[in-house]
Amino acid sequence: MDAEFDIAVVGAGMAGASLAAALQAHGPGGRRVLLLEAEERPGYHATGRSAAFWTESYGGPGVQPLTTASGRALRELGVLTPRGALTIGRAGQEGEVAAFAQRYCAVGIDVRLLDRAGLDARVPGLRPEWTCGALEPSTCDIDVAALHQHYLAQARRGGVELRCRAGLAAAERTASGWTLALGDGQQVRARVLVNAAGAWADAVAVAAGLSPLGIAPYRRTIAQLSLAVAVPEDLPLVLDVGERFYFKPESGRLWLSPHDETPSGACDAAAEEIDVALAIDRFEHVVDWPVERVEHRWAGLRSFAPDRLPVYGFAPQDPAFFWFAGQGGFGIQTAPAAADLAARLLLGAPAAAVDPAPYDPARFRQ
Image 1 (tube, rainbow, N blue to C red):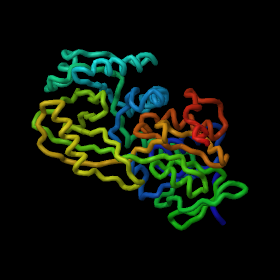
Image 2 (cartoon, helix red, strand yellow):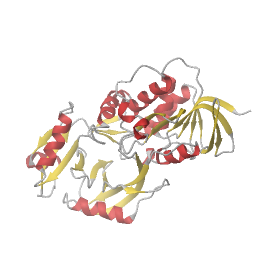
Image 3 (cartoon, rainbow, N blue to C red):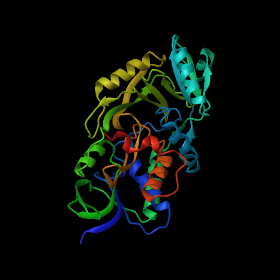
Image 4 (cartoon, helix red, strand yellow):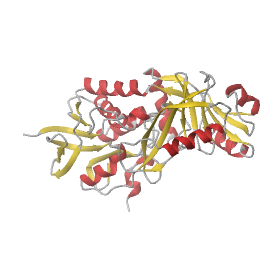
């Protein structure tokens, strides 16, 4: 006889792991939750390839409430290390930097405008054309691996069953829920199917007989550089107001991204030489720090819904199918609040601190 579960969550990256843990933390126990992972270990794709920072402005105003609401939980878990973020602009971009600062100051985030002297104090070797900036002191590095392992352990203690090498092969709708055929050759039954499959979210919906939402994966590249100068340990996360690069120190090296978003199929993403070369070219126009070599390069997939907001909630076409996807590049920094919100929606619990309405999949209904 097939194993039976109340809820089956497809995807054991940060999204699926945090939600599985939150489900067991809410309300009375006794519910059976299955966490499915197609790879040999959880977190192989986007979760394991994150640049790992928490900054309240990242992702835009629609994501900011989730990020801000997650800060306390992340601090209490001990996975944040103070870093600070500095968004910089060239001469002529003062208005863009000021508008950026005003947008987030208006919702209570501490953002401070800096002149050239303020930039020099934080980024030695900055080239002359960079004249203005906005500092977010609250930004922190995130220990992504520790956070992910915390959620997996919390889920396990709550009785969640994790199956790896068990991706969703097919889903058949039944009167009582779903019969799921898994990649390991097994079948299980579940009352509710949760789609936390990241870049594969639309494919999971199609496998379940639902219309896709247009959640599209995009490749993001990171290169680890060795420099001819010492990387300041207190260097903030440095971002371009025009979203053409960001970089930060990491264990004596520098992590650099060209802030690329290249459309991609759902796959095991790999960095391409042209994107690494583009990142270095942009970097060399920012600071006078000679690059000695590229020590490591990688890429991950960021998945966005058409309006670039996450999708949390039951599918309008099927009350036994729940979307938890489209979290772009901010799924880690928003994990506590997003998982709490989704668990409450799934279980019919009292409302979360963050309004779920902007993330409702019904917004895409034709």
